[in-house]
Length: 423
Image (cartoon, rainbow, N blue to C red):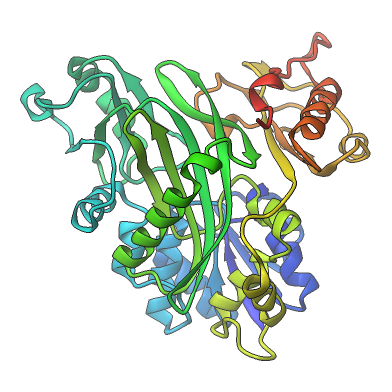
């Protein structure tokens, strides 16, 4: 079996290695010839992960049996279009993939399916103030087809939307943005799987974010269990089922972001992919369900079949009893503007109690700008424990051990330990 994995970044490394351990030959495509996945794949091709024609050409040239992606948003549409063009297995129809990657269509589906979400407008170049009448500030402006919080800002007036729109649209290939009312509250992420139309909940995590106004939504941690689970867990799962039914999702991964505020649960964004906060590492640790193998089964066209590539993972999915026990935090750590002169030891981090995985993502010599979106992420550490108190002690120990030094020798890691606690 041969699989094309679209994207060769840090978020895809675990999957590339997992595929090779399972005996799947891997072809990886990425625009960056220095992408870390290039070094661990059986073959690497430089190709735009947003270009379905280029992706189809790579798949055809290498004679792959399937195409997959994970940990990244927009390539879901690329994979679906390329797989359809070549007659390869796919979990989604193109119109579904478009609605699950482009907020212009996503919001329309929310309206049609009765999914609770914030009032909004879709805007393009030359927007007039009267087009935003009826929306109550503060407002959130975001490109309809970007990812990683690029171009996402919180604004205090419609006039500011007009001012910031050109910058936000610079991150949109389509040239549109969504303006919606800011909804205060906690952010959560629902991860699950769909097999033959049945939804399997896996985790609800708190998505801990740090605003650097006007930029918002920069995630610094995912924590489990969610502090919202007791009061809102059932409602979150029920809304997720409604999304699955409304969007007609029959197979594959789910990654839904929701907001819990004064008017209850609202849906922020939805995606049919494995999340980008290293879910393919921490979900198996919590649940025993190998979601990478489930993903490969979908891409290779034999999901859950006896003797299929993901038969064991499917059995674990069907045997899992939600919710999982224990506690966990995925620390996504950052630094301020600097030139990276030296980083700490990953091996030392991995020896700390409860650490499942740890990586520094910024090599020496890299210049880092302001913390405006997830592209400035300096690394991550996944920490597990029997309960919140134990995990929180371990978070403190990890932050004491993180090292990112500038040319003057100063450690420039931004310490968000307390904000990243499990509650």
